[in-house]
Image 1 (cartoon, rainbow, N blue to C red):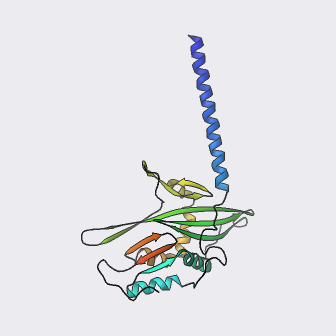
Image 2: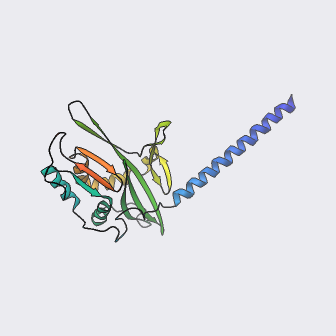
Image 3: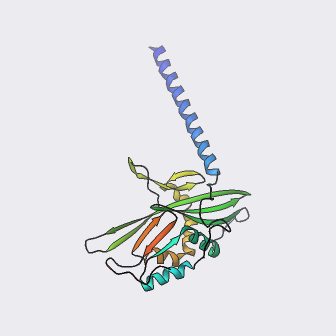
Length: 229
């Protein structure tokens, strides 16, 4: 009887040891990918000299679209060139001597946007990002309601409540982890409050597509305005 009990204890001890090893290994791997900045080369218009074509004043573009009632398409490159030209946010606090913001970028994919902050900490680059998606519903009267969701959809279709929040370095993290970096994104949103209000409050229809944002201020059933320019 005692021998069987000892065998069970030994088996349990080995399983516990294996679990701890796997847990520590997973934690070490997570730290490694967090420390690796995501590649920014595919983000149009982010690097200096990136993108091509005329750089519009996006706030004025959206104001004109709202006032005159026509849809407007804004490219990913235009958004990132505009941010690079107008960004005011700076890293503050006690870490400001060692931490600096290199830039803020927007990556547009089908159905979602990724807002990326690139920092330099002690001569090393780090990135953190947050996913956004737009959910719009139309009722029987034709009224459209818009919800801005701070996630990029579920990790797994079978687990719809577990959403992708963003990326710490190259590691995709659940939405709950955004609480660690939310203040940084709020500071950026405050700098662009007027532009965000035009894009998400004044526009009736909003579509996030690959490399472009499509905005339409017209009410359902209205005719084409003066056109996009």
